[in-house]
Image (cartoon, rainbow, N blue to C red):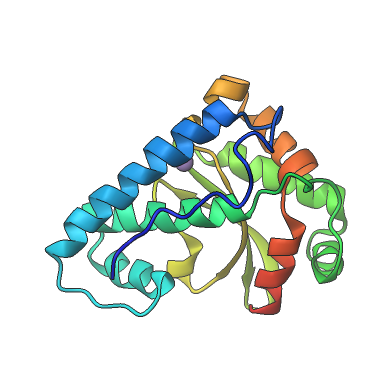
Length: 197
Ligand code: MN3
């Protein structure tokens, strides 16, 4: 199985001013692309077969190391691009809205927990909304790790590596996380993942 850099599901300028084309050029074109190139180099010499990217993530996680780091980062970034939308942000709609109310006691509580999760991830990593045992939860992961390998179903993710926000927000990670929820989060993608959870 070969990794392939996906096209962004929006124009590079479409998320401005919340996420700049410059950030996307570097984040997608350089960082994500580097994980794809390195991952394919390592996969060429690995004896691993998988029918889907999700299965490949789980298989490479067993051995860990550079192969998992590159495959995991490819999965996480691909999921992140789909978690963004030019017409996104704000309170959720559809089934996810009811489940967020049930799990967190309202959208404002969810928002506070999601931002706190992203702030609580020391160093590089990710903050997720996952479905685990039929219930929505906030999860965080370090480096290339993903809740997929813990048996949870990812619903949404925000990248909290500094390369995700430094050009637009410098050191202000909480502002980036707030802006992700207020302006960019793709609830249609969340509802689609929830339906398959
Ligand atoms: Mn990143």
